[in-house]
Amino acid sequence: MGFMGFMNFDEMMTPTLVTIIWGVSVMMSLVISLISVLSIPFSRSFAGLMIPIILGFMLLTLRIYLEFLVVIFKINDKLE
Image (cartoon, rainbow, N blue to C red; front, side, top):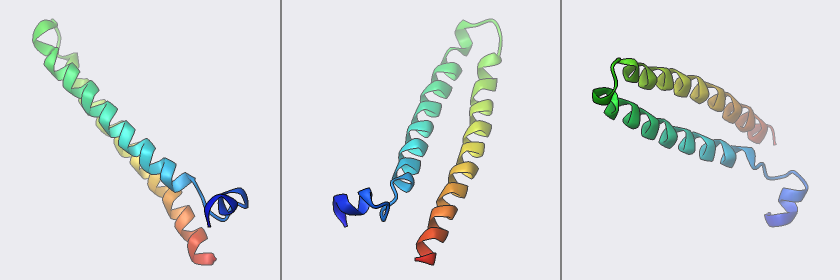
């Protein structure tokens, strides 16, 4: 379809954005978790252990939301 399909809303860009958002979120969470765990020996508390747990829950919530968006677009594809 190309450019005209995009301009006529025949092709959706949100499924591609969902994939990019998920990939970037996972990479950022891994980097932040690794930094927080590696900084534990230099700090006086174990708060660095809570950051990976919180990020894990945030990733789970984001994944559920993004899957909901993908389901909506799959329903749209099936109706066509």
